[in-house]
Structures are given as C-alpha cells and as structure tokens.
Image 1 (cartoon, helix red, strand yellow):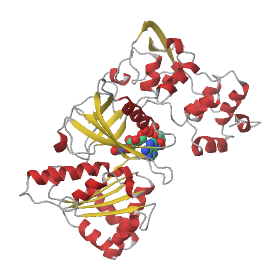
Image 2 (cartoon, rainbow, N blue to C red):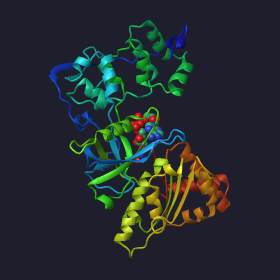
Image 3 (cartoon, rainbow, N blue to C red):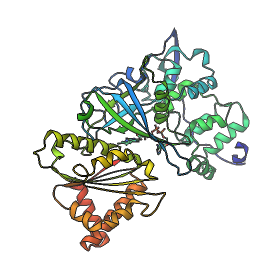
Image 4 (cartoon, rainbow, N blue to C red):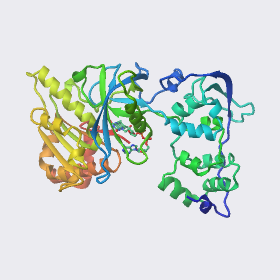
Length: 453
Ligand SMILES: Cc1cc2nc3c(=O)[nH]c(=O)nc-3n(C[C@H](O)[C@H](O)[C@H](O)COP(=O)(O)OP(=O)(O)OC[C@H]3O[C@@H](n4cnc5c(N)ncnc54)[C@H](O)[C@@H]3O)c2cc1C
C-alpha cells in the first residue's frame, strides 16, 4: 500500500494524545517468569467477571485434540479441544477467562522498532513524568511495579486494536519521515474521514499494521504503556461435565480463523505445539461468575431447547454429558426432554457428531441439524420454521427453557426472528405480539443467550 496516496493537500490533524509517563530502567536482568505479568499487579487489577473467591492461576494444558480440520473450500475453521487442569468447582455452561499473550515474533519486532532490543529484559518501572500536566494522571494498574519492556509488550498491552484518531495524530510526532508524518496526521483529521473509514474501519488496519506501514515511527515505550489498551482475558465456555473427569480437569473448545487468527487462539496453537511429556505447557485461567446459562442437577427434571451454530455447541456438550451422568446416578428421578438445533458448514464440522448420536434417545430426544454447504435446509431459521407448531408447544411448557449460543450479532438476530415467526404461525400472533412474547420469555428466564462477541 502506498501511503502517499492517502495524504490530502489540506487538513487539520486531530489533537494528539500526550505522554505523562516515564520508564525508568533499574539495571537488573529479569529472567522470564512462566506465567503472565498481570498476575503480579496486586489487588488493584480486576479481571473481568472473575469469581470473587478465585484468582487467575497458571494451569497445565493436559491434552489437545483437533475436532475439525480447517477446510478452505468450505471456509470451515479448525476447531480444537483443550483439556486443562482446573482448580475450582464448576457446572456445565460456566465460563473461564484466559489471559492471552502477544506472539514472541511480534514483540521482538516491536522491541527492535523501539530500539529496545538490548534492554528488552532489563528491569524497569513506570513513574509520572516530572512535567506531567494531567491533574489526575496515574500509573496503569495492569503493569507490574517492576517489570521489563518485553514483559509489558508480551503480557500487558493489546497490540492489535483499532487506532483512534488522537493516537494516530500523536504517532505522527514520533516519525522522522515526512511522508509518514503527513500520512498519520492526515489520517487523524476530519478532512480525511473517508480514508479513516476505508483503511481503518473497512480494511481493518490495526495499530501494528499502521506501524508496519510507517517503518520510521518509533513511539516511546512510556507513551505506549499509557495509551495502548490493556490486553484483556478472553472468555471460553466449559464444554464438559465435572461428573466426567472430576473438578480437577475441564475442557474448552476453540475455533481458529485461517487468516489473521486472533491473539488467544494463536497462543493456544503455539502452546499445543510445545506440549511434551517432560515439560508441561501452561495457560493462565480463572473462573468467571456463573450466569443462568448453565445446566445443573436441578435442571434434570426440566426440558431444554438448545440452539447452536458451529463452535456454539461447546457448552451444550457439557450439558448433555452432565445429563447422561445424572441419569445414571439417579435413575429413579424424573428426567426432562432435550431438543437440539444445530447449524454447521458441513457434516464434518459438527463437533462430536458421534457423541451426539450416542446421546440420541434418553439424553437428547430430538436432534435437528442443517449444513450451510449442502442440501437444504441450509440455515437454522428454516429448520426452526419447519418445527414451528411442535417447538412453540414445547417452549411454552412451564418446565422448558430455550438456550441459544451464538455470536450476539446477525446469527442471534436471525434466530430470534425465526422464533418470532414460529410464535406468529403457531399462535396466530402479529409480529408485534410475537416480539412482545419473546421479550417476556427472556424476562422470565425461559430464553437464555450466551453471546460470544
Ligand atoms: C461468554 C463467552 C463465551 C465464549 N466461549 C467461547 C468458546 O467456548 N469457544 C470459542 O472459540 N470462543 C468463545 N468465545 C469467544 C472467545 O472469547 C474469543 O473472542 C475468540 O476465541 C477469539 O479470541 P482471540 O483472542 O483469538 O481473537 P482476538 O485477537 O480477540 O480477535 C480479533 C478479531 O478476530 C475475530 N476472531 C478471532 N477468532 C475468531 C474465530 N475463531 N471466529 C470468529 N471470529 C474470530 C474476533 O471476533 C475479533 O474481531 C466466547 C466469548 C464469550 C463472550
């Protein structure tokens, strides 16, 4: 990409962000610690949705298994299951937070750019700049009191984020190259709003892409620490029952984008390559607060309608395994009925199809699936529409709960629309009445969603 093509003849740069921090090197060498630096930040640092009784901890990745192989022709994503050591109690549907880290190569490149390769592992600390003009300036809580440049860039800061205009304007001040300076300053301006829209918002250039384009831009580490977002934990759904392996182990399932894979999923990929019998590979996790999106012993007698697309099946695999074990443990107990609606690209992309078919019968009374690359019906809304009468009758039973695991965006909306159509058809409602009824079902806790994005 030629950045010169994005420089207007007239523009007014956005007000640049200013730096209020300084990095002070203390001289010692820090040998790399195995777990994430954010664990050394003390109590001031909160982990989103963390259970109050539990701190993040490095746990062993015991096993990994590829559930679905990537396939370019059908745009199927690679899906992997990880078995992790666990240190807390959980129920199917609960989620964990995973602390990611940035790739070593990316961090090395950035250290080189910042001319910090020689000091990468030298201990340092942050302090407020002497000439700090900001009244309420403070040190970021997600950086440990003593750390190193490598640790900051690996564990604490997000490097792949959408750069805001004020940040771009400040970056213009950190390059000696006139063209780069004009490009960055112009991109931050109101006059170049169309360029910002097309490069940043549509083509998706992230902070590191901008630095790649501007090879002479060298923002100081202290500036990055102050203005780059914190590298945040990512949630993953537990995909097994504690009755299978005991609470000492848990499983999660992730999918990997073939192009530009994400931070955490790339980290998982690297870690599973490193698993050997001699040296366990670890990942930092913590239990997140439970929500109503879970399946516990109390639910054995109730009915479920479970709707999932792709990897969204993950939490339901835990539900079914739990139900199977509970039925074995308590054969005399009344058991509810479960219906599963699942959408995937191809039959091979359905997670644990063999297990699902084994659960058919007492655990799973009905399984309906569709494949977007195959014979119709291709999409879940069509499948739901075909079952409209049955589905609504089942949904309206007092002991039935509907669980939907999807992206919270277009897919969730298309399923909500399909359910609304089912209600309209089966109960002869208007669109407005059906949408009111759906809302009520949500309020009553009969329509529960796990939103992944
Ligand atoms: C409550 C909850 C439970 C979740 N449970 C799971 C789970 O069990 N399994 C699971 O795989 N994910 C799950 N997610 C999503 C997960 O937290 C991450 O967002 C996802 O794995 C990508 O993380 P990343 O750090 O690799 O990507 P990032 O670096 O954060 O991603 C960069 C961009 O790429 C997109 N992206 C990255 N990977 C994918 C992908 N595989 N598919 C689509 N878009 C992608 C992101 O949405 C983002 O826009 C859950 C999310 C929530 C909120």
